[in-house]
Image 1 (tube, one colour):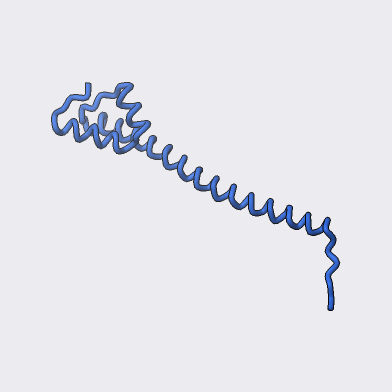
Image 2: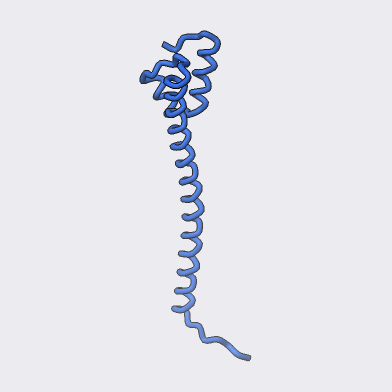
Length: 95
């Protein structure tokens, strides 16, 4: 019978390396998910602000560019701009 002579110090190092690898794997997965979420929020905010300006200046929708409309477009993005358009089409004033 052949027995590999791995000492307890060697086994401890291997266990530590395996533990570090598992922790790094989970940190990578969680970090990737959080990064996707943050990029999605930032992109939605930028698209909301840009579409608000395009609707107001290019298509003359009459949506006022004020602090509350910019704040709503920044926080909620395109759904807020869509709400502004629907309110404007129904004749409900935003100012």
